[in-house]
Length: 135
Image 1 (cartoon, rainbow, N blue to C red):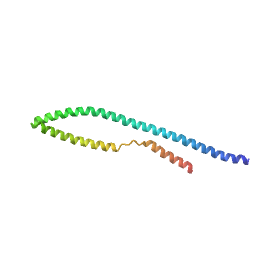
Image 2 (image 1 turned 120 degrees about the vertical axis):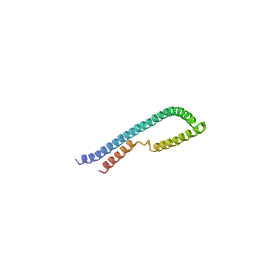
Image 3 (image 1 turned 45 degrees about the vertical axis):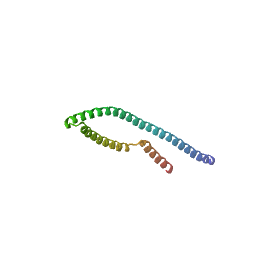
Image 4 (image 1 turned 90 degrees about the horizontal axis):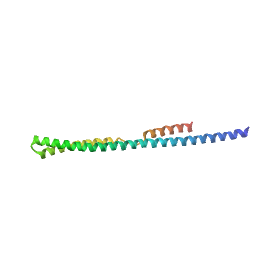
């Protein structure tokens, strides 16, 4: 009976160690799959957003050109000077462009491709594993 007790002790430690390795491997594979999925979704959203912005920009440029031309012509009739009307409209458009550019830059700086869900999941998993090892 002594011999069986000695062999069952190491066998159970080996079994536990093997299970821990398998669980760790499975967990790592699941974390990597989550990371890949999340990054794919983030990149896809960025590309769709960029494509829509480009399409909107094409239409917006055409509309702005037509509206600007109409505004310059209307203001030229009021001021009796096409040059002064173009200067006023151009200045206002430049101020609007600068404002939109600064706002867009501030919005882009807050965006991140960091996979937050994966990072949070890895932190939770490492806490659980450290509790298992220490406990």
